[in-house]
Image 1 (tube, rainbow, N blue to C red):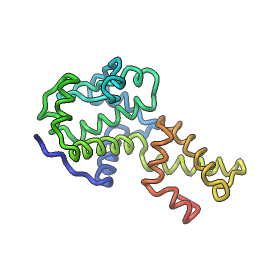
Image 2: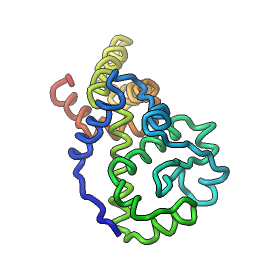
Image 3: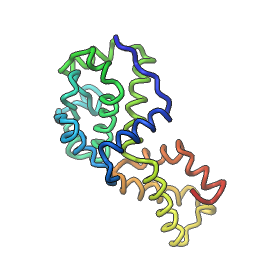
Length: 207
């Protein structure tokens, strides 16, 4: 089995930034992830009925890297989750191409066999890297800073003090930012914490 590369979060940020420079140079928000998958990478997006219910996964990528299979309900009714699934799977394609090329599976059974061949640690690394890369691609840092600053001003203009109503104010800000990027509020909350933006605002009252 090919080795799973070890990337730090900052390694993944640099790779995500390079990816966006190549495939979203116009800095469109929300990032047009579906178009990137289909037209830039020439990957087929294939809805699968009951994928989440039967196998507890939202999506997976074929061993030849030509198809991303997505749970049909996620595909049709959960746009934020769908977009993140595509970004997550693109993370595997960008970061783990050699590993996938070493396992030429095309079916769900083949994918499960591949996953089961990994140790728990290897699988954790694989998924964390895909997850982190997906989040960094869908929510570019510069755009996140821009929208966070804008929504801090909008919330403050409504007379809501971040200092006096910290949790409520940030919940409002996070919800609105999530709509801008077409991701979940949870994804934005994690990025604001991971990138230290809330802590920075608390210290300096600015981003």
